[in-house]
Length: 176
Image (cartoon, rainbow, N blue to C red; front, side):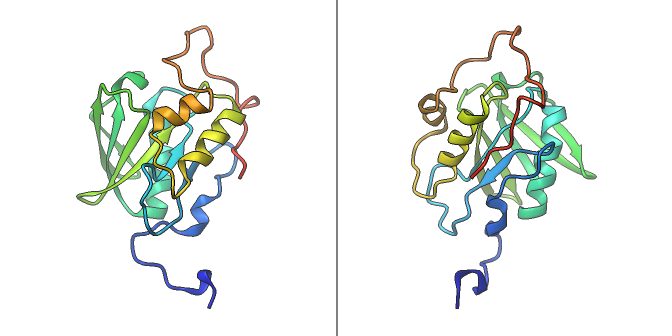
């Protein structure tokens, strides 16, 4: 019996989620192990700092794989204005904001099942984002999100406004 033939424990991430989504949609990678022993469960590369534009796509994709998402915890300093909740796919998703600068998003499914995602800043280059996302999904990684961004040359405080978001043509889907 191969690993793909074995039944999966309920609530664990399906193997197929490890693939990056198609261009023009959410850029997300998630760890596919059953152990969840690493610091991070995955990585997300939003295209902008506008949470109202970015979060619905993330929650929609995650809901398809994890079930209903009830809360999202975000670093308040990384986003342009955070509401306390958004209605996404006809469900209320509560948004918790903390001024911690930890470069993560904490996703809550149900009451207490949490998934921690590295948030790759929108200004990251495709190569650096790909490298950071690959490190975040390693099952054995105990490296914190901020250190992953530093190690891949991404970490910096918010870019100067003149840099702004890049065009879709410059942004490429992370490859495995």
